[in-house]
Length: 109
Length: 112
Image (cartoon, rainbow over the protein chains, first blue to last red):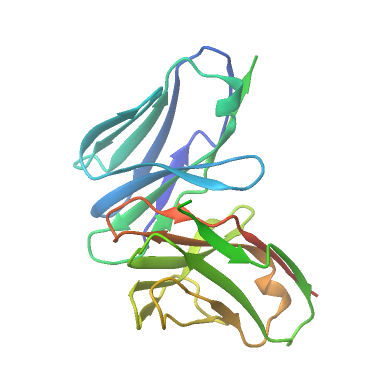
């Protein structure tokens, strides 16, 4: 079974805090996808990565293939960052994605 | 504007009445996919398509059909909907398997 686990499930932070969301998976992968789901339900892609680190604005994603682990960091968090963050993996043996159940982030002003 | 469109956005129907949810993308993407999202279970892949005329089952294909006759369209067909197919459905597309996916706005389906 291709398990993807995210932690924490829920996270509340004060505006300005540094936030880390974790994703662990159990199989070898070709790529990992970080998604953001807004309170209204829409889903936006944040990063697709297969090694190392990517940065976009205040968001940073890292992946350690050997440890089967990825982190999403948000620097200087803002209330508009409040959303559900979802990790998805593409196993190296297949063409379909497997998703974590998401981390619900609330940033309080 | 580059986008993935889905229709309808909301649908309430009854058990056994065939329905189709349309999905269209204007980005010339090769890879298209359908997902359902349920509380506590997260997103699960129903079907995907690597290219025109190439479709394959995802994790939860039972009760669904798809077709990919043209690159831009990837409809999801429920031949005989049942209440356990009540869910939020997303269509997505990407250039290929290793590029970021663009998601449609979602279709909230209720089967009574």
